[in-house]
Length: 362
Image (cartoon, rainbow, N blue to C red; front, side, top):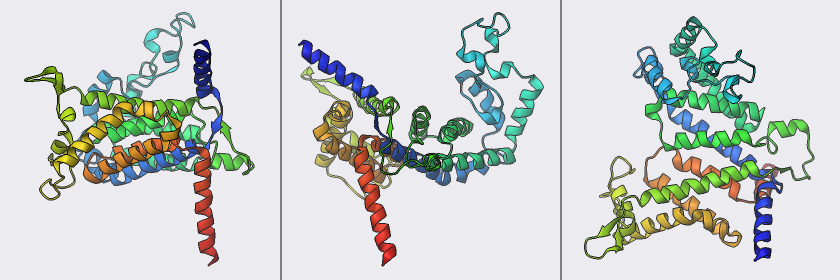
């Protein structure tokens, strides 16, 4: 028993501390930034003038009360809720000079300055200019130029535009902001980046990084699936005849996907145009529920991990092809890059390079 506990403890310590290859994190950075960039170019860009133009559908000042109440930030609406030095320091660390009410930036600048800032953010030209900066920042994150700084800027600007046009966001927008937060904590520019190239590392030497930031992202994915699965069980109710010996619910009965495919607000086509047999709906419903509830356990079993990764990618591809829920599936699939070993990514990259070199030589 003691040996088992000791081995488990050792495995847990190594899970968090043993250096890992940097390629999966690099692929995650590239994919996440590319997906966010595409989501902006195909989404917010088209609605920017309507929502924030000369005669905006969402006037800038309508955000202020909501921002103040919710604690969210928006660089276009002044210093509301922006943290300052005192936000991270104990009270009275500098005596009475740094009082608790000075913790936020809005309490350090004058009312006139705050109003001038908000007035600047209400101008369409300011919105367009800052949005252009946002797009450039995403490109910098994708290529790994000043990666940490650009990721920090991307986090701030993503929050700014998501909170400025909150009526347009969906689960995909929330998930990619979450992904950026974790990316900010990681050495994301250690491999396959301009930063790494400028350091002139030897290409033959694998770059190793501390694993804890990658582990946090992997755990985030597992928690997302677990709680999504648990949420699906909210409608469980006892059977009219057998009571709790035979619990019922749309997901347990296998009809949830049938109802989703009949929801014209979600599906890409009418169920009447492409009717999925009920037996298929039930199998897919139960399969989805099982996958989400047990993903965190199954993905930890190394021999079957490739099959779990393929199942997850298949799940999100199916959602992408059949449902209109923004960029949630595309962002979710970015997280899977961290479940594939670095050696596999290197082999894949070498195969692509050999193919391109061969095509150029013909």
